Image (cartoon, rainbow, N blue to C red):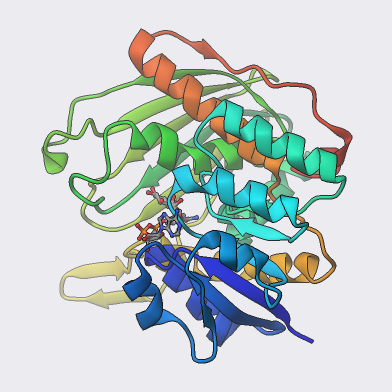
Length: 337
Ligand SMILES: NC(=O)C1=CN([C@@H]2O[C@H](COP(=O)(O)OP(=O)(O)OC[C@H]3O[C@@H](n4cnc5c(N)ncnc54)[C@H](O)[C@@H]3O)[C@@H](O)[C@H]2O)C=CC1
Ligand SMILES: O=C1[C@@H](O)[C@H](O)[C@@H](O)[C@H](O)[C@H]1O
């Protein structure tokens, strides 16, 4: 029987995930939806799906075996805690939560439950190119990783809705997570620098440079630019002791014509990571069907939250700010790597 899923939040990414769960992937059916914008939910709900008045009603619905959370970040904690309270597997979009205290509450609840239920939406880990890059680092043929450059460029962000804090507490979480995963390391400290401001973003403080100091001593430098205009551009390059491994540009048709040689650039994350999101959900469906979760865990969501908090502090202080994690619970021993 297919996994009966309920989706909370049917905005941009919720609709994209609804499409893949209803049209692309197998062994799954969307049986319920909820959104504080009821009209939106009603207009988007697939035929036959229950339109729930609240996330609470969706999570408690007898029909729903597993939950997908695509609401705004500040709503995630309450919804996650409720899923854990009823023992339902849950996929939660990033950011997992928006405070360290919130991350610890979710972690305590899952640890007390005694089994992993939560997968966090760090889709880069499911991307074939990032997986190939990690395989090269892990096989050790280039020696130890020393420096990782992570470039994260968005064509644009919604004016007025995307604030100057968001490069650090919304966008950076992907680079922080992929750095930990690629380098098999944890983040010990964070520095933030602001280069010349781009005129593209109006009042927005953009771009941003973040240095992530890893426990091993490796350093990650992250460029976050959110108004680059030409497309969505994600790059990564790992300098190791005896070689360099780089993430390829997205394979796309190369056009040669009178303007030169051109390769299309993805418009946004939905296009660039379309297969990664599909694979992320394939693996989620497989684990949730067994009543559990795999992939990026609450521990990883907690790590990303601490890094976001440290980055916000570092932006204020101009200094390196420490990231200090609690000891890892046994439940998360097998995850992250
Ligand atoms: N992994 C990824 O690449 C991406 C992740 N995201 C994350 O997904 C989440 C949603 O982002 P978007 O779809 O871009 O936002 P959005 O604003 O387009 O959609 C959010 C939807 O959730 C609903 N909502 C908000 N609070 C709610 C609540 N308490 N209960 C029920 N419904 C609620 C809103 O009415 C709206 O329909 C965010 O956490 C965002 O960071 C977004 C884009 C890409
Ligand atoms: O999660 C995402 C967005 O919320 C965020 O705003 C973008 O910067 C990221 O690239 C995208 O993956």
